[in-house]
Amino acid sequence: RFSSDKYATKGVSERVPLDTQLALWSILDKRKQRGDTLDCLQVFELTVEHVDGEPLQVVRNRQEDPPHEETIYLDVSEPVDGITLWVIDSGEYSTMLFPEEY
View 1 (tube, rainbow, N blue to C red):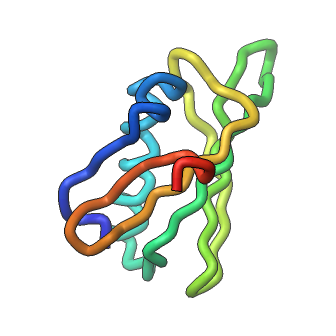
View 2 (view 1 turned 30 degrees about the vertical axis):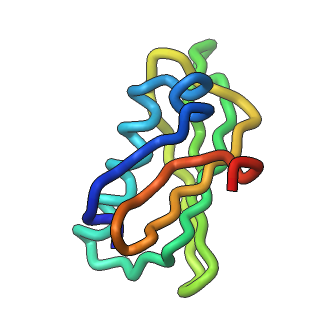
């Protein structure tokens, strides 16, 4: 899963900085490398947390089958708050989108 071409919708491209998008794809690559079984639907919830006065991007990644949830902290240029993204693997390609774009 998540080995084919990767795409982001226009909405994601307009609202989520590129470095954040790339970091989310990297999270999936790292999970594959460590041997995790990935569901075809990955959910990413993005929030911002301030640590020592600096904003950090908080990413909660979860899936249903098999159940998995983890929280990752990223140092990105422009943290975004209150955004949920889906990454769906169709088999032919993977797409990053907002749930309302499905």
